[in-house]
Image 1 (tube, rainbow, N blue to C red):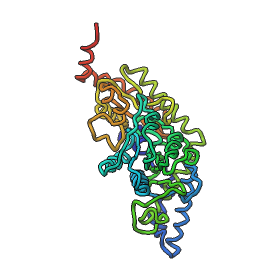
Image 2: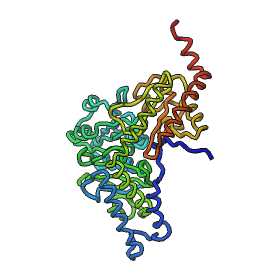
Image 3: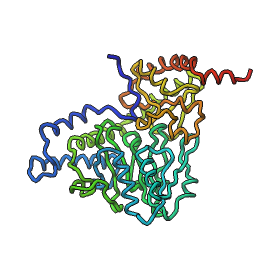
Image 4: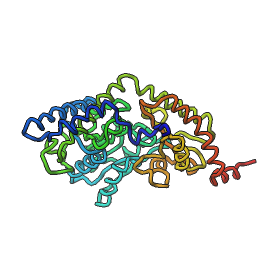
Length: 395
């Protein structure tokens, strides 16, 4: 079996061994329902409370009960958005960015079909949020502003504190999808002033199937899933104890990585990979804001070839990367993020996202730098786009 070089950590991460170990007893030994009156199940209430505290500490929430456990960040996003509009029914204007994850864009499109006035704030060529456009379009009828903390494709970080401050000046609820930020950079919900925040365990070495919605105490909130009394009547459904334990342990480990300088080492490897590609392969461009991005991500466009073809050849060497968000990679069109950034057509189709983790090694980076240049050269030799570009070069 070939060695896997996994550089697709924005899609998902390996579940840390410590997380798996912490979860296992709650599948087979301590399997009681945490809502039960009997002690066998009720004892699991303590581990849920401990996990809630661990997540609250990771994002610097003031109160543990501001953490609501969900099944995933998509559920958290939908819950936040629909809660905000239902709690502010008189307001019919909502704002998001043009480069959000589909878990935000699709609810906004649905609300638009229901008569809401929706504004999609654009970005510049480096993927930076258009603050001037935002200031022009927000008004006192804006119910909710939902803007991601960091972009999943380019890693570009948005000025969340400034956006939140403006949203509150107009009486809007502010929500941020922080899936690609939590565990990679410091996230402080109090300093940023956010009302609601979504995150997912599997983006920082936790299990799939568990997410969190942070709701600041005092924020008007209406549940999305209704039924039982779980999560203080804010999210119905039997508590998923093993996975809640898992996200708690993953949050604890993420805090240690952030405070111990691990992510700086990841950034150094990312830069080594990026600079190596720029030095050895012509007609490439880095997409995103090089000064304000998460430390593990580089999005690189290779001119005149298809990104999917690059990924297929890389896969032959066991190298895993992506051409954008895993939730949209089934489309043959350039990603909505690169289109919003107005990346030229000849580069937009050849985009590859490399996303590293603390498990990435120098040897793996060197393997990519060895195998990638001949792959690009071969693809350009057979690409009609490349041949057309050569015929249009002035003598």
